[in-house]
Amino acid sequence: MLSEYRQRFIDYQTEINREEYLFRSGRKELWEGPELFREFSDLFRLQTVDELRTRSEEAPAKTDATGIKRLISFALEGNVLARVHEIDEQIEAGDEDLRAERFDKLQDAVRSLGYPNYLAFRREIREVDYQSLAAKGIALLSQTEEIAASALKHSFASECDIPLERATPAMLSYLKFFTRFDQHFPQDQMINVYRELFAGLGFKTDRQANVVIDVERRAHNEGGSSCYPIRIPEEIKITACFQGGQRTYREFFRAAGHAQNYAWTSRNLKYEFRIGGDRAVVGSWGMLFENLMRDRDWLHRTYGFTESQEFRQTIELRRLISIRRQAAKLNYEVEFYSGQLKNSAGPRYAELLTGATGVQVGESEYLRELSDSIYPADFLRACAFESQFREYLKTKFGAHWWASPKAGEMLIDLWNTGQRYQVDELASMIGLGELDFDWLATELKEKSLER
View 1 (cartoon, rainbow, N blue to C red):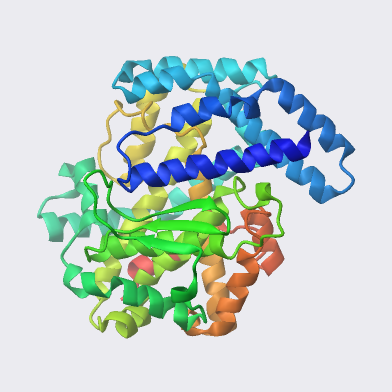
View 2 (cartoon, rainbow, N blue to C red):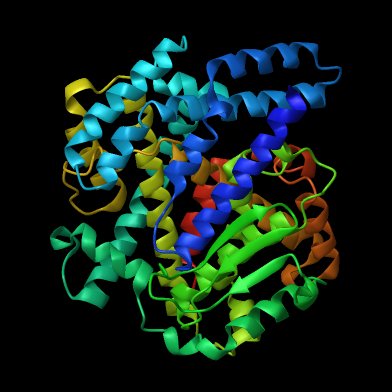
């Protein structure tokens, strides 16, 4: 039974990622993900979960049991999401009023499986202590509140000529889309920068047959850059929009970090250790390369961008507000999914997000903002690991670690493990200790003040 299930698991992951790539890249007009979900519905049956649990108890080694547990989590998650599949299709078609009903059905689904609430369900299948992490998020918000308010006040005054009190959430988009420095990041250099970056780490990306960069523009292409691990490590796709500009480069480097992680994943790993593990692991590798856009020396060496202080300050502010926003969202989702909010979900959402972002946020988006995966937890854990690991690379290989083949060898060794480990385990294996959110808060403050 186990070998057959694992093969179906591989087939599903391959087909759903291929479908997403074809649709998002504009190679096909219609999204057929729901049809695939139904085609592989046997993977999510409770009878199948029971059989997997029996195999887990009989597994001869800890690694085997861990792998089967990963498959059980995948099956349970699919089983719960299958209960709201029809509502999802209606919401996708435009019926936003069904979001509250969707949440009620999620809660009913996990209770039928023996869990007190959705938060407890996610905690068991993902092995993340969300409440403890939310408390660390509150501390981070407190530690960075003063510097965030000061930086936002200065930014809105200088860039928009308005006081912070009159700023709106839409104006925060400036931090992501600003174009004032785009001339330093030319369109025709993107692929060369990518090649040279990884060449400095000892990689010959032009010989990576398993990584394909799709830059073709199509009518239904969603734009931006994304990574699609169709079959790991043999077939990895990156969609990229080579139009130049700081945002385009950041998105492309993030996707490239994801792709290299998948491309160097060992073929000897069971497939459940190649995909479907801790999302913070893949996220951290994307951040590591995206954050080179914050490195003064790298900007100078790569683009000849010598006077980059203002640019880096804007990037740092964007990162600070993004992390603060996710910390607030994590607290909101922990409270919501544990059933604490009842009739106060809208006001609590507005309170938390307003406090984190410095601008007045309304209540209307409180259901739309919920993530089934409790994404803010993965994002914050990835940020903490990436921050500590980047400092480790600088200590071990020098400030220009991105030009060290030895650093590249270390990255390959870590990428070989795929998603075998949680991000917390990776930190311990490397010698970083526990994920340190005080360290992250200190870095955010220091970088925001750096000149």
